[in-house]
Image (cartoon, rainbow, N blue to C red; front, side):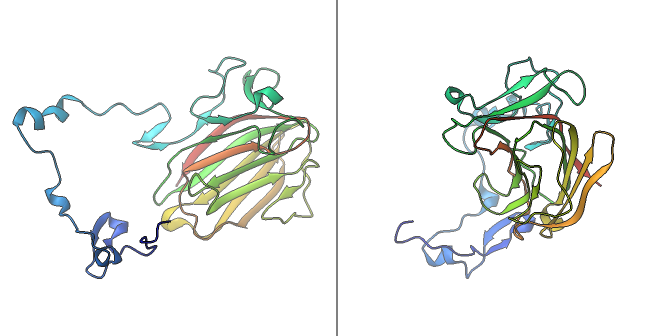
Length: 269
C-alpha cells in the first residue's frame, strides 16, 4: 500500500440501494476526491455516435445463467466427451505429475459420465488438482449446492464457498479426510465416518446477503438415501454473504482418486 492511501468506510449515501454518492464527511472528500454527478454520466456527441449502442443489443444469457452475471451450476457431465475438461470451470492441475481432472466413464451416479479427480504424491502442492466456478451470487438468496461423490480409499475432498476469489471470508467449507472423517474448522464430529467405494449425496445450504447469519446446513446421504450426517448450524465466517468462488479440491498428498457427479446449484424459496 502506498504511503498516501487510507483504508476506511467511504461513507456512501446508501450502498445497499446502490446510491454511491458520497456523504459530506466521506474520507474520500478529505483526501481531495471530487465527487461527480452520476445523473450527468452518459454518452455525448454527434447523434450518429450516441445511437451506436442501440445497434448492439445485449448478448443472450449463457446456458448456465438465470440472470445477467448470475450463473447457477448444473452439470451431470453427460454432454462432455470422455477425457475432456468440464464446462464453465477453471482448472488448476499438475499434468506432468499426473494430478489432473477429466470427464470419465469409469463411474457415474447417474447416466454414463462423471468428473474424475486424480491426486498423486508427485504433485508440487497439496491443492493440485482443483477446479473452481465463479457463479457471482450476490443478493438476498438462499442457495443449495448438491453433488454426488465417490471416494476411492484414501481420497480427500475439500470444497468451499468464498466471498471473494481469494482465501478470505470463507462460507460453507467441508473437508473429508483420507479415513472418511469430516472436518469443520479443525473440528471432527465424533459420530460420523463416511464410507469409501460407494456413492454419497451431499447438500450444502446457506443464506446470502441479508439472509447470511454465519451458519450453514449440511446433509449427507448414502446411495440408498439413508441419512449419514445432518447439521443446520455449522459455523462459517460471519462476514460471508456472497459467492464469487466455489471450488472442489483433491487436497491429499498421496495417490488417490475420487469422482463428482450431478453437480447442481439451486436457489431455495
